Length: 342
Image 1 (cartoon, rainbow, N blue to C red):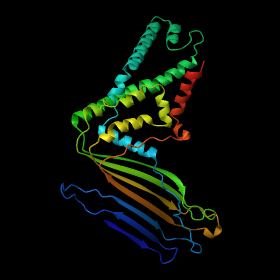
Image 2 (cartoon, rainbow, N blue to C red; image 1 turned 60 degrees about the horizontal axis):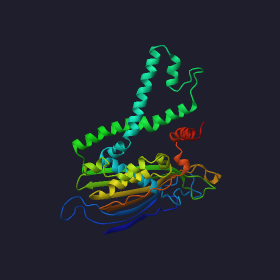
Image 3 (cartoon, helix red, strand yellow; image 1 turned 90 degrees about the vertical axis):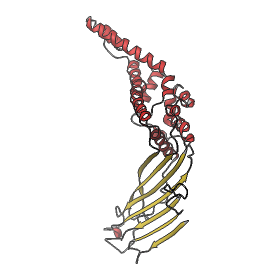
């Protein structure tokens, strides 16, 4: 076991200083297999630069109270990315087979409508062609429900259909070429913060970040049936449930079920590394005594965990404001209009 701490205090409170504390296991190679050894490890590093400009009053710029930003929702998304990279695609044959009847109906209806529209236009019957496309032949105005209906059809009919065609090609490529035994998934995000030790006197804008990486080394490939979702009845049941996609906006059950169908069956080892911290700098002097100050700060906290399995992260409710993205708002309006409109 290796552990320790290093501290370099500044000669004065205005000088550069740093500290690092770490704890982990020893060894570079495993004794029997002689493969690279992964060790559990934690460390915390904190530093603050020389204070330049004025040195009459000290300005601390690394005073963020809590910069832990990694959430359960982040873990679900990271595990979903890992599953996709292990499979090499997003194609789910079982779900597509379960929805085949709806797809055939949509394709047949669209082909028939387009065929009749072209036939009416060829005959010079513009009024009938407009009606076939959802237009009133007399005033040539779209019916409001036709507009919202076509929008939803495009978003949840044609869009997924074309995406499925593309992913099926990727699935064929992944299966025919084989998959790597070493897979890496990573996810990160940043948010603004405040690191001033005295906000009433000066500001210290900070960029708080969190990122996590999972390295997976598999001892065997995922089975053909599981790769194509044929052993995932829960996802099929969820996808064919009416309005399940709306529920997924606020609680990603679908993503959780996809992860649950793959992750518990993985045979290998995993190295999960979570890094959180922030970079800060002196901002605006609210008190004239701090005018002209220049200083930067940095904090990095790292945690590495080695395991032979991963616990599938359960989904958590998403903030409604966060869930209401600009892509979903038109879909929600169209869906509400279909359900409530006249």
